[in-house]
Length: 561
Image 1 (cartoon, rainbow, N blue to C red):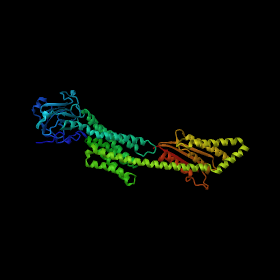
Image 2: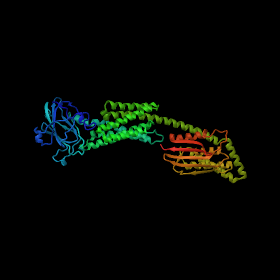
Image 3: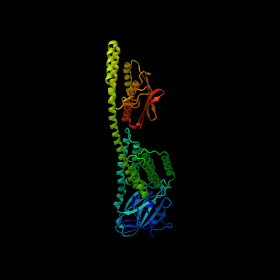
Image 4: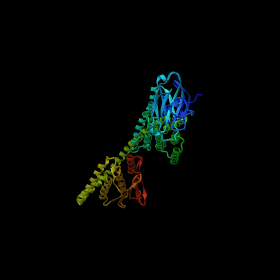
């Protein structure tokens, strides 16, 4: 009776254990029979004696002890194989027609003496032993070094060309390594971009996702590149499952953030589902498949929702997510091997294209904001230096020189201090809050001479360590003096630290009398403040102004990205 060989796909230990080499038949051979025997002296088993021979069970080692024998009857024909590949969670000694052709680890009589073998091993088969016809292959197995007795390991057995078998172990890891390097670079690149001001939301999460997928690829390719003793195999599987859990959690999270979608309850449910899968999943492969599959499907739903809402470039994400879903449905187990990583490459391409467009739009917005700010600065300067202002200053200085020379000197010094401060701060994108407050006090001192009254600026809170665009508080104070002339001469600024940044609240006198000027909140100063804040902080700053309790209250809030 012909049976399936011990190299059947159902016997594969983990993704890629036989590297696609397992087959009921191979080039130059086929397995025509097999049976197993519990531990016995080699002389007895080699002689074919013993009362305990049992038919070989497909894909599983028997549960009758840590040591056993496997006997395979192999029919050889042309071209004759020259190598034997064996994989499993055991040490082994291989006999071909009664002749020992190799050992992987040591199969000893005492459990403590057994040396663990490698998870994969290729043995050379002497040519004189592979004449066409039937041959008897005996494999003496010792799995006593394994700490995971509850794991029922499979095994893989392949005959073929010795060089091809050896190269196959490394060649299947070459492409993942190339992909690993690319993912690592993309991950580091997007992490660095994510720390830039006004970077798209979710970029840092995507960077961590790329690094996690790179780590998953490294763990998958480690076996083919370097190998390891078989007792470490389950540890590697646990590491793969742990990193797969991180990937499964980060993929939908980065999708939510990059596409500005929110689904906190659904995401929490997804994480709880992952926890249940890890605890009660039937096998490592099944758990990985359920985790990555649920993550891909959840991300697909998010991309479709963003596309329906008209999000720019959402179609790219839908395409990448669709490729992942197709790979999952067409061949679920190949999805763990290659499908997920190929689809993730498309995902990376979609993200890179999207963020390049986002940064391009951001540069255009910054250029527009800078031009708008420059025009507003020029308009404010022109208003501040209008002819009748200069004429009033010169007339005042002329009168004070004749009637009160000390006052004239102090006024000129105050005016010079304000202009020097304006020049010092004008060309800087951000200035310390303490310097801006000093500029405001200089301005109020100058206006005090002009209005013949004393203006006060009260500041409460910690002012150090905060930077703002130059001139925005100066503009608010100037508007307060202009529109609140004749009212209370006290201005107050409260500095507050918030859980996500800081807030400045400016309170000043307010007059409800109509003026020929544009109403507050619609003039050049208002637009200048908004443009300056956007130019410095993007969407992470907010400005508002309104009447509260008879005062004009303006708030400037900075939120950390």
